[in-house]
Image 1 (cartoon, one colour):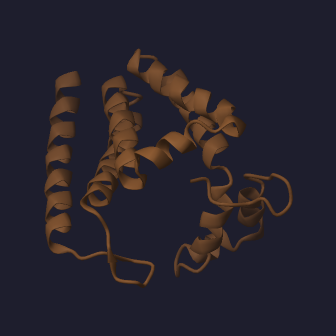
Image 2 (image 1 turned 90 degrees about the horizontal axis):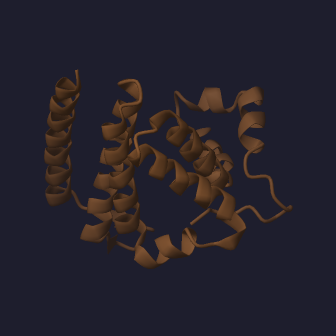
Length: 177
């Protein structure tokens, strides 16, 4: 039961660690067309966020396994901090206009750590939608240009669904971070 989940999680973690380590040591990343190299913290943070999403996915796949979900939450938050920096992370998670989403997200993380995975994940999803709701229409608009997926995102009902996220005062739509 639980031992098999740990063995699978360890194998996936080891595989992803090797992939991230290999890609960080051999690939060159550029940003904003000015040949600025991405820092090692950003590379490691992106890998940790990917691992976090992987463990969250596995935790949900294994019927809300609280250990995998807790590991995914910790890896995601650590990766986010390394990717965008400590000051930007603190600034993002201390904004008073988003206190409802912040409390819901961290309340969900706390519930997952206390082995209430279903309620915790529901709170986390609500918090993420509240925190990143303004980003969903931006992401959906950019996905319209992707060859295979673009036809789905150009469908009128899908466009309407994503445009309903993050409705705030007119002209106040900006990236959440």
